[in-house]
Image (cartoon, rainbow, N blue to C red; front, side, top):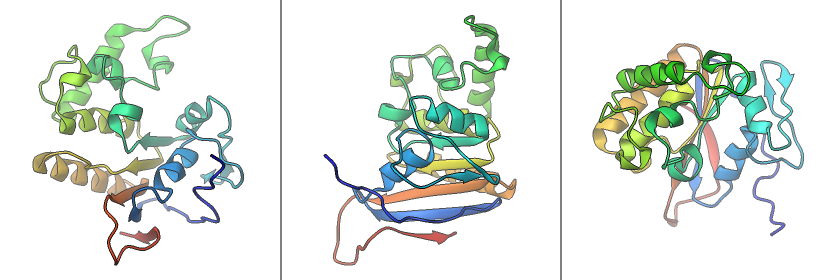
Amino acid sequence: MGITRVKDVSFSVRAGEIVGIAGVSGNGQTELLEAVSGMRDQKSGNVILNGNALSLKGDDGAARARAAGLAHVPEDRQRMGLVTNFSEWENAILGYQNSPEYGQGPFLDISAAKKRAAEHVKLFDVRPANINLKTSLFSGGNQQKIVLAREMERDPDVLVIGQPTRSVDIGAIEFIHNEIIKMRDEGKAILLVSVRTRRNPLAGRPHHRHV
């Protein structure tokens, strides 16, 4: 309680660039991503997107970040990225369910939501290709693809992504890497965190570099 996890951190991510942050687990990477994406209130500092300061404080900070063009793939897909008791199509619109494309007011256009989910399944080769299946029944790699498809296909200006290939198989790793590079080549700004789970004598404080 009361511990400052991230302090005096300043960096920029430009369009068409991937900035990587690496370090030992528990050194503030998770808190940094959550603060940048509006999921955690920051005590000080600013997040500037396209020249405008984002107002991220409050329970709807993440929603305002998404509306401004910032998408977030959290490190823990099952705890933060998905509701595993929900179907694939429900998770495919999670966080974006109030978008006009899914209806107006309190009524959800389920057919539109399922159509978008089916597109995600095809584009990201999610298996099995069953949008009505509970997300808990998909493999880790396919769960990750569901989250990535939801965030990447919103065409964000900035993608904030934590441990994109955590606990996924080799085939999914290659696919995910290619999709991230594709976004970079399309001119998107990408902030990517990779975490070392075990401390070793050579491990130091987190640092960032351009990749």
